[in-house]
Length: 115
Length: 372
Image (cartoon, rainbow over all chains, first blue to last red; front, top):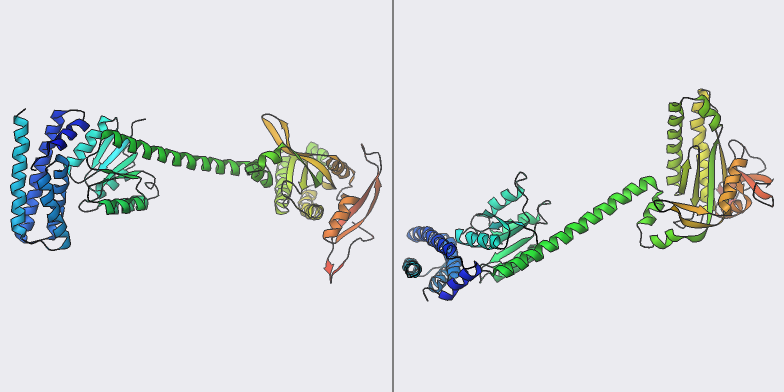
């Protein structure tokens, strides 16, 4: 699932229904995701598997927090392989993460404009 | 629950923002640090407000959660700041490691504010309890060392011991009491300058006090030129009679040095010592607000009378004390005669002690014909 709406509902609930704050939080997520994506792309271009670990971990952790289930799974697998020192199809998997980030962005922003 | 100042240590802005928001929502003040190094800098910054608790992410660049926790626990000042580890769903091994390293608790990254609040409260309460305990122990230590300056070390130890209360409430025990006072002190204090009198008393008290400590006597009181010490209470001393006599001899010898100095300045001061053994009631004596650890009994009165009776430089000992002491160690003494003393209907047999005998080949040399 690109976006688990239960997770977003829960974030809204634990912050006391403050939608404006959730919107800021989503913006923070998206900004950070593009920073991490840049790092991931650079690591992929250099074939530096060690440098994949941190951005994959950050993206995974934040993806889980906003309910981006698929992105979380992709990054979890990527992080685990990178830690093990062997990432089959590195370039393709980084590209898949990038595509999924776009999906999540559209879903999150779509959700906002639909309100 | 009072407001706490909480340091959020996480490398991702998303997590920091969310945690800060949750903390503020439950009434705490939040401070942020984006990695372990910055967190330590902030915690060690004495010019900044004190941090009450740390929420610590595990996986961070540069200095991760484990390293940060290890540095905190190795720091004497920061060791006790509670740390709650914030972990992702698949970091359970790391959580276990952190708790073994001294983390107070752990929480998932997306946490219900009520759970967050409950964990924070519990960690802070635990910290307060530890702080109180430490403060209490420090206070007891301070009081004990202060008490030891006002009371005999034995009495100070008794006050803070487990059976102190029942001992203080009063008990009967055989003790040996020693009274010691100065001859000519009144004349001395009339003719000498007050500063000289105080100077002499200080030297006298210091010298006698040192010997009391050395012989482990319980000093009941110092009163100007005289003082009373007893043995076998509160600490049991089976050789109490011999100890008292040993101390009296040491005092007489030490005093000879002091008085020779004063004799050269024209002041003749002499010591008179009386020692007696018998049962006494010991414990707290006085009134609410001012108690002393004291002894009441015939032996104390007898020791006091013998000390008044003693001629300058003499150690006058009740026959019972002499008999008990002699069983423990050889003592050089001469019969002191039967003394008629105020308050005692029958004359009291006494000995005049001159020194300690030597143990020669198992044969104990004791009573001598003459004494000083």
